[in-house]
Image (cartoon, rainbow over all chains, first blue to last red; front, side, top):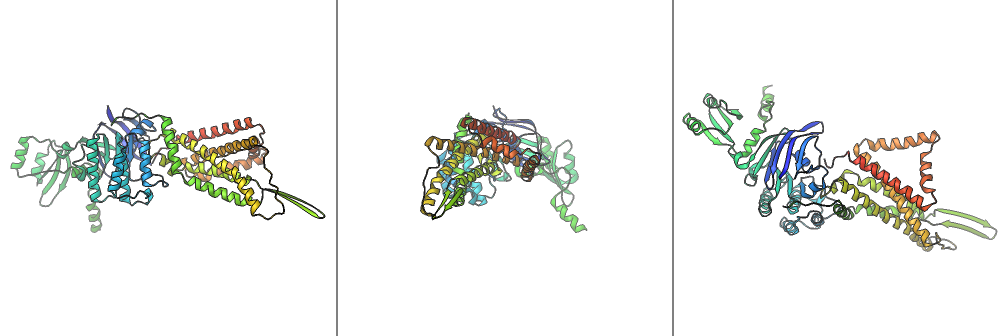
Length: 305
Length: 248
């Protein structure tokens, strides 16, 4: 059974089309990264999967059931974001106790050890925490719940580098011991490369790419060389990104489907071939299509005047 | 991880316990409002006096009427408050859907109404103690307000039902307001405006409302009337809440 299935999912959110015909499916027990620019529709998608928002049209199924307002999906899913609303009357310890009552797979020992490790005081309240501490606490709730579907929406907001590193390790260790489906949306792909199995790239409300992390690392190829020489190799190739450089050279990122023969010919023609980092590739893939250029152009224009 | 099937009843029970622990603020407001009611009651809720040459009789009644009235108002406000986004989102921090969330809130409100009614009625004894020890007076006639236990119990049930009725009104009003913030102003204007208009047209709704519920002398009929009205108001609130998205 698929953990998540989406087909032609549409959602309007505050007069904007947040999701446009989004279709994908995710197998059980995978760690999947959800990558996309700000406002690409990641959060909307995750909230629909968690059953917190209602889709406008299309099919969405979590373990074969429609998630919205569904008790079964709610019992088997936890959605963690940086705006978790816990009752202000409860102390942090009491919130963990409540988690234990509600989630059947809840691991209270793990919750308490992480709680101590990250230096929380049991008498503290959730609204008294700093941004990073709050994210850390939410992360503990998310990990300890051991929900078959665990969704983290930008879990590392405000965390410092050391805590982020601890979080990735904790997530990986707990996942290996208790495999479950984990969805993570993040802007720190370079830090999570070793953690993620699959990547969903969302761009302007639709799916741009869905592949395994290993494939993504080899998906793109960077070519640097004289413009006309490089151009001659780009016929019938999918160009992902192109940047003109000085002295008639250019840097082109293309989809990596070259044959060995083409490789050799390119090397002979003096083109530098370099791998493209997954993080950079995602940035290129989600470049706005309307030709605004880079942020540099904004400043160049003002100096022209 | 294996998938878990949960029962609605199981989650409702857990949610009630969760609300009992997290919504401690409502108890604080109950204490405050009843103390305030007590303070106002010290003046006596009714008095009569007569005098002849040589002696003077002045009778002051000390009852918990004002406290009960305040508690009814508190029931309305508390229910209204529980429909606000912050409280609704608290539910969704853990396992729930809209049905369990609403059912547990209504059950929790019922428990609150029972507590409010019991403390309100018991406050009459506090009031009498106060009046006896603190207030100046020539002679204290400590008569029981009601004749026997069964009448007192009946009064208790009636108070619970009335507070619960008003909590359902508050819950409905709160849910309607949640649809659109503008309704905070529009709803009371429309309700009160309609009342005034109808009153002028010779149809005083509020008078009929009070006659319908409070002048019912048959206990069973009273129970039936209040409970069905409460059910209708809660059902309407559920219908309204179905238009709300869970968390935005």
